[in-house]
Image 1 (cartoon, rainbow, N blue to C red):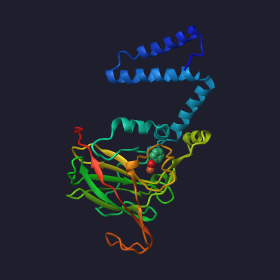
Image 2 (cartoon, helix red, strand yellow):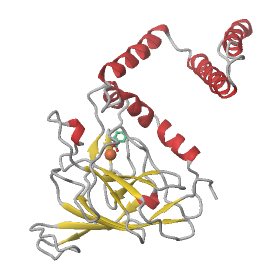
Image 3 (cartoon, protein in one colour):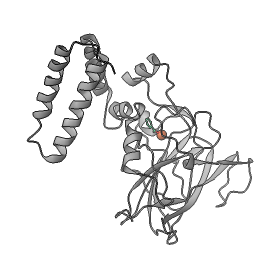
Image 4 (cartoon, rainbow, N blue to C red):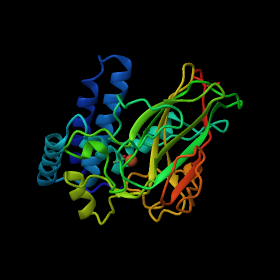
Length: 295
Ligand code: BEZ
Ligand code: FE
């Protein structure tokens, strides 16, 4: 950008940046690299935008409100990272596409690591209301070899677009873990995902509104898949045909993760004989993990 200040002013501003960068010279190498780059970029932002003091105060107030509304189960700071695309940029930097491995996407703020275990074919929805969905596939490595006993963590919003932690009654629903069988196969019931808005009751809601941006996420089901010797995969599958696939508030959609949730008629026999009086859906998802050594 063309400088809008005198050469003298530009020199003074550059000196401030350099003094702060130099102050991290003695930090351990990685911390030094991160902090010096952060300072350079943040100072460039202030100088390029000619940030006003009122805007600086507004930004500090925004961060205060983010802290006030954040809890163990609900991090406004993850939302900030998500809606600015920083989460997806970090995912992309750390998980480049390779050898047909399943693509990763955002973790989001609603993962809990103590989800109850269900047996293979069990119901991860628990008491979460919604149309039943039968989800199945196989976990393999990039050479196509099954990964027996791979651990799958599943979490999702219910038909009202809410995760269990967004209710105040302490329920655990729409989340569970299960293990693939000796052939790497897995199957479970969930509920057919629906599109929902990310939380808008904090400062991020205000930012999206002021910017004319939608808070919506396209319908999806979260997966975290792990097995000894493999990189942990954090991803979702998205529902083909969802109207928000191109407008995800957190930029998490990848073409390879869009799956057909085939709808079956009410009363049609289910794969495991479960009696489902209304319609149900079925989706397949083949999961490919990358070895930990990256080979
Ligand atoms: C989610 O998919 O759960 C999510 C991801 C990012 C922000 C908010 C919610
Ligand atoms: Fe989600």
